[in-house]
Every structure is written in structure tokens, then in C-alpha cells.
Amino acid sequence: MPSALDTPQGAAELAESLLPPLGNRWLHTQAVAARAREVSAAVSEEDRDLLVAAAWLHDIGYAPQLRETGFHPLDGARHLERLGAPVRLVRLVAHHSGAVYEAEQRGLTAELAVYEREDSPVLDALICADMTTGPAGQSFDFDGRIDEILERYEAGSEVHTAISAARPYLAAAVERTSARLGVGSGRS
Image (cartoon, rainbow, N blue to C red; front, side, top):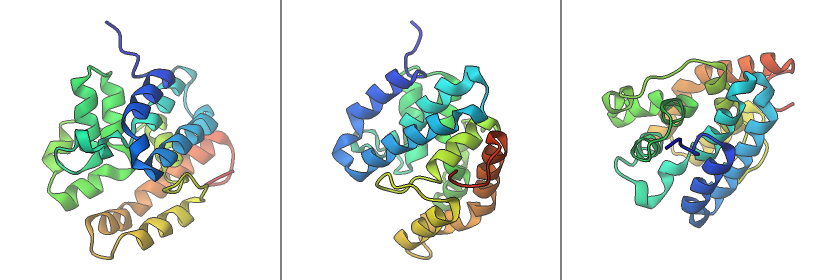
């Protein structure tokens, strides 16, 4: 049976079944999906639905019922894998927004490495959508979003340390997406 999870509608339905009780996380997810639609011209036409589906599902690992490791990219990817989601979708969720940097801080590098990272316009666009959308769905430019994360998480925490280390990688993904769209970096 083919999966509907890699379609925007199927992904949105799964996200809506898990995230609304999390308040701002649900607002963020909806806005990231909308932003992914906005930047979808940066990827091939055949990958646009996958991009938007990944945006809907990127944070499902925050749902309490999916929590295994406490690391949301990994927990979300594992859940999608159990549901039989397409491999590319699972990998995009696993590696969204520089997850490898936080996995290192949490001692979960080997667990995350089970999911191969695809360095592609789709992953870049997913990073761009996430890294230009605030925690309650606000629009940010890239630097504003990074600053917001660094203010929200205490210095020395896993997230603060990981985002600080990932900043050049994330900035490059946003810049590549903006270049593919023919606009300046961050929000256009």
C-alpha cells in the first residue's frame, strides 16, 4: 500500500493528530509548512510535495507519545519509519536543521547515523523554512531566528551549543535556497 505521508495532505493530517496539544509547536509547524510552500520553487517540481510533507512532519518527534530518546528529529524519524513512510521523508525529518550537531551533544550520533543525510535542495529548503520561522510561527530572517534560539536556550545547553556550532552550516543552506529562488538570504 503506498504511503500518503509524503503528500502535504497526508503529512498535515498526521501532524494535526499529534501536535495541536503542544500549542506554539503546532503554530510553528503550520507556519514552517506554509514557508516551505513559499520556497518550494527552489526544488525540482517532483520534490515539492515531499518538501512540504517534511515541513509538516519535521517536529512530530516532540509529541509526548513518540518520545523515546528525547531528541525530536530521531524520535520523529523512528515513528515515521514504523509507519512505513518513504525513506527520503524519514531521512529529511531525521536531519532537519542540522540535527547532527545536536545529536553529537546528546551522545546520539550513532543512532542518527542510521538515517543517511541527503545533502540536497530539498534539505536546504526545509532548513530554510524552519530557520526563518519562529517558535510561534513568526517570520524571522535567518540571523534573527538563530538569535531567538540562542536567547531561548541557556548557554551550555545541548541546543545552544549545537545551534552555535551549526550556524555556518544552516546559513549556507538558507543562502543556497535563496540563491535558487533568485533572492537575497533569509525571508524575501
